[in-house]
Image (cartoon, rainbow, N blue to C red; front, side, top):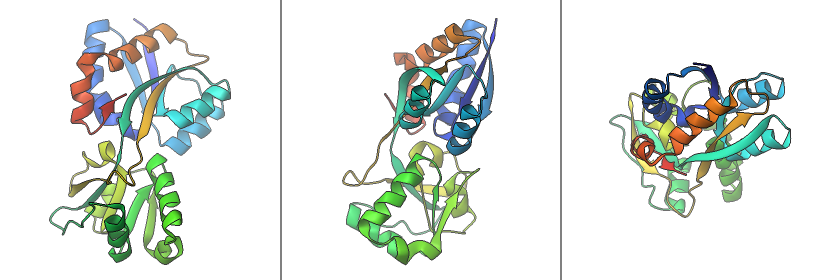
Length: 225
């Protein structure tokens, strides 16, 4: 059976780790997986690196499709942005956009990623007009979840996709951002235009999109797309 080369960002990692062993067992396919930060993944793929399947935000995949790097795109899961604190720390009120704004202004330190959730937060803070006021206490993280900074006590609040905060030890999820400021990101799978195993890659996508996969996706803090 052919090996399927997959490159994906951390948002779908926990669901992927739960779903892929049954896929390998059922099909006989083996997966070769590379976990890569979104920014780095875009650079590597645009630089000519070839895989069979890419799992990334729908926006980034559309960019790769436009560039002719990805041939097909399939939506597989949706994720909202969450807020976490160090285990045992007081949990701020995040019941509304205004409450979150107050919590951000009051916090001694804030961490967010360089991925889709971080890009959204930068725009949100600009919209609120507080970017300059909080500049000195903001930490933008790459290479590890934003929640790790909260677990180490370096920041009071960590923002990231709920699916990326849940597995981090030493933190507690306060909850998802309230509906008035929530940003839902769709994560999609793209079959590489030069995939060596396009049919096997599509079979893996079908497995992720099957109704049987939905409970694992939900358990890991996402919703099936």
